[in-house]
Image (cartoon, helix red, strand yellow):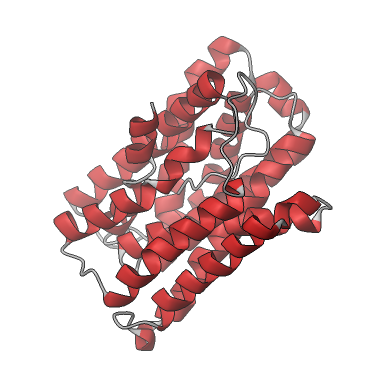
Length: 297
């Protein structure tokens, strides 16, 4: 299951890169979320999880905005400029921002010495990547980097909404309703901003992004949480950037810059320290998606 999740949330950056070749960023978001919602809707209806989610619709909508509406658009726009592998690595900074957000909410353990060191190491890795050779700053790359880092902030904050406001709402209901609401919200913008005839490659990529990397990936992630608990479930995310970088090199012909090579291990080490404090935790069985800071694209 870990290997499956590492692939399912390691390949979206490739599909996003291909999709924005023909679709506008808003169209990518609308297509991804609406198709994902349609895949999950029959399952959600059969399990009777939509009604509890509808009763908490303001917080479900807030979750959808922070987890999907903002990040999906930011990633799609950023990948018009950035290589897919670099995007995947920058999204892996989620645990760094999650530690900072937890500390701001009063969790003093979030910045214990090992975790604080992880923050310094991780952000130093980001600085090396951005300032190092290989990133063309003249074509809006720095703005795109900022968009991806803002995505990581959103992904760090969203689980706290689930943990504090949607704890008793079935995750499947929350995800299905959120995807549908975001998709319908972006649909008018998508229709107004997409004028070119999409290529077959972009259409296939968007379809795979919606079905595999959104609907199936969320279902697999919930199953993994039920199997190993919410604490250990996100451990696969440290492999995601490796998958994204390799696919970008092999399929898209992206170059492995010196800055990326130097910053890559620093980012992953920093994220691991910030998320775990360097301590392995025991498995806690069961649970909802509460407090997990995963790097889902």
